Length: 476
Ligand code: PXG
Image 1 (cartoon, rainbow, N blue to C red):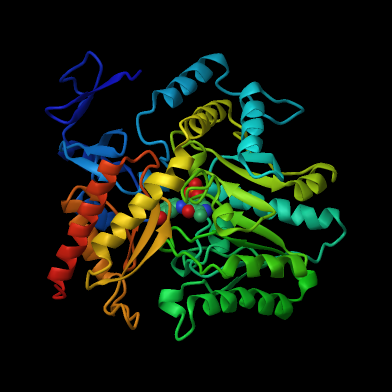
Image 2: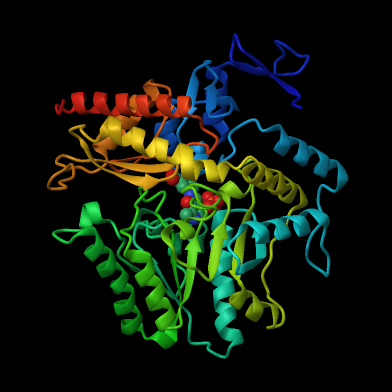
């Protein structure tokens, strides 16, 4: 399949048939070239170049290999996306076939093509009943830009042009385009933007461990949701178009809202005629053991943003799924003036179909729900509940956020938030484990095809990193 060969001994990738050619490079050479020409996302370039990037050269299943030959268990599924695991031949073959058959054609100008037709029908089959229409783009960020366009058009088409405000949450992540980052609640991103998109406001996140005070989780969930009602009243329901939220916050730290939160958010949205948008970029395609994480939390959004697991990250693709009541309005309101050259790209669509068929036909989502998900959640709790620096373990299915904290009983977090998480992350590096840190929350979101044995390895390595961290800061 590949024109490149991986040399097990040197851990170097070489063009096939050219062992030892100049195209093969050492880690040092790769790092030097990377430093010379590549600006990395969300990175301090000079600090990174000083330390040198880790060069990942191949992957299979739940493992990646670096250019030094280290085999690393990928507890983050790439960047929350490689749901079917690495190296699935079906996806590569689908791309190859489609590249030969029809590598590109657009879906503008009264045109369509078989891959995007088949993908749309398949998504309609897999998504909950009222989601039968999909608009395509290339990423989660573009998906959320698209959500803004749809929401605006939805109200405009119904002669309610004042409904423009979209309410989001602090510490949400909705992407890095200007609109995506404005929707997100990451202030460090806002600080570097020339301006924000208008008519976007934020309320607090449902982060009980940090902000719950003396309230029970259930009370706190209700109180956070009711902030939405307060905000709607403050700006006027006639001015509010939509609320958007990740069913659980991913990049923000795998923050699982209390059970009371989403039903109350839904009640408020319905009461004030506000569209409810679920950003399923991380939660979609099986992560919680349901096809979509809004199903896990028991609510029914009007729009869903999709990306990442749609193609398992093998090729870029994003989409927005519309509830019938939204699709009807958008379909019947004349031109929708939005689209991207690669909206519905045939190769991405072919890969998405192959990916979704793996998830469906191998019953991967069901397995996460009834087998590997519960096994993973239980293993984490057994290993870490008694650890002196573990404050809470949040999650479901194959996603978890492990809060490192000074005192579990009082939910006291460490001063200098993030330092302890960084120490732990460094131990993960040393232990050939990829586990992400957001502040002092350690995050796991492995490929959904992970086995029990691999879960044991993942949990052992994560536990070891956390134990070493506890020792280092004097808590062991
Ligand atoms: N919505 C959510 C919920 C996301 O997690 C996006 C939208 C944007 O998707 P694109 O494809 O435009 O990146 C995301 C992306 C991290 C991290 O550090 C998370 C994401 C992206 C980059 C880093 O956890 N999520």
